[in-house]
Image (cartoon, rainbow, N blue to C red; front, side):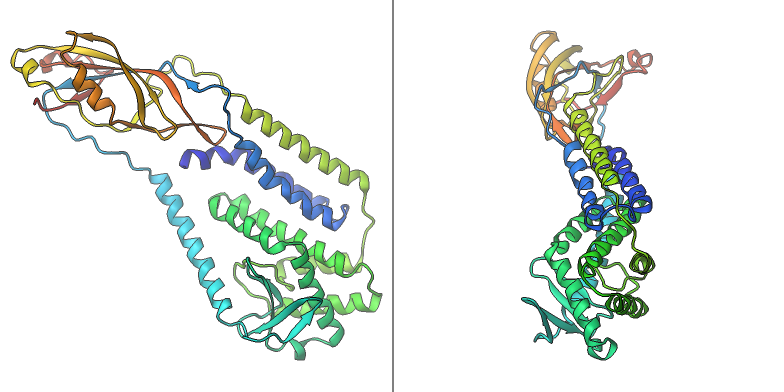
Length: 402
């Protein structure tokens, strides 16, 4: 899991930087809905980066050598500290999000107070600004003082704004954005991009609501934005809020001074995104070249010690076993065969029994675990400790005889 998370960072960071550049420089030159839809390239690129590579299994010429002696040793499974740190961070964020979700859920009134089109709106004692709340069955939530705070025309436009969020299926896109933020929480670009994504989301709704509105109605709408911003929540939210402070200024500026959009720039943005996505897909389908001159390419994360046969120990017999095996997609050993052994048959059973229980870290290509074939390991069974002093480049396994 840790390897997969790290392997995504290159393509994810480049994609997010391109999207942040688009939001910063092109928002006023693109049609608002198109600027919002460009964010689809983020999950799409991640999918393309993880296309399964089923052309050939990963072949490795890895050769590992161990020395088995008579003293007991304790080999424990390795502990992935990075994965533990990631899990703790994700758990903290998830707990924070669930807490605020439940807090809002329990504050919703049982009966609707307003309705726009076929969507009912409910008041909430916790909500300080209108919002679309929920994922499976989203509701429009309004603060308790909604009627007192806004005029009738403002109320109608605010409800229309939240209904547009519902029509755009923004509750589902926000769920996807939250899942990506939770998965890649350690990348600061993710949180910066999340804010930029929300800006484009709100601008897309504003453009739909104000498309046929008069100048007076636009002024009232901008005033409502300011009023909501003054009461907006100061915490991470799972849903779009009508008056988020971080987006309010840009939204008001675009209402005051709308600019003509450029189809050429829009086509160019789509073309760049499509080329980058296609290139990512092609790169994930091409297997990387095998490493050269790399010793011990496959290292076990859990190793069961071989048993030094008692009869061989009594007779002072030393020897070695060379085994060939595969590593499955889950990291288990498979297709174990004896390539060479000396003395023949003496240590074969001990070597096979031990290797069959070893666990390796799977090789990941394009985010997908790959089967490795034709790996070899040599187990040298030695009784003389003095003969091992010069073998500093070989890992030693010390076991008890049975």
